Length: 128
Image (cartoon, rainbow, N blue to C red; front, side, top):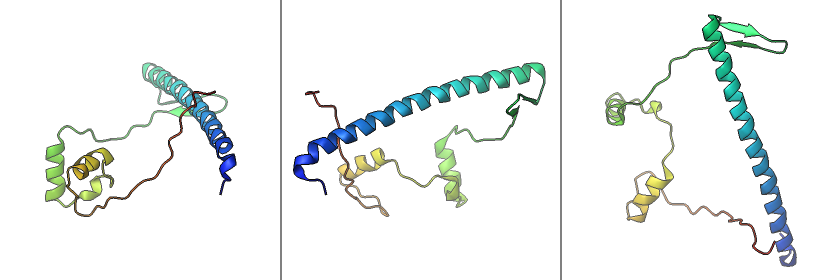
């Protein structure tokens, strides 16, 4: 447990660590964008040249295809899932915002319960 007289110092330490992490996350975001651009350039070049793969000194890049779903009508999908008992097609998590909206109006969806989530709000001090 933190001594009360040290609380401000520990809060400042937390703020500093969070700033460090956020700076890393910004850099990671930039690196991911650079990766995506390079991936697109490689895919375009392979397509134009008619190649399926190519190599550098460190790695080989190859075209990989797979079939993935695109949702065009959620009502039809939900109906089919219910009719065929294929709930495994859905990811098992509720939308917190939609659930809370119902809960705030007095509706508690069967199979759920309200649990208080305690978190810490951390904002930059205007004194610094």
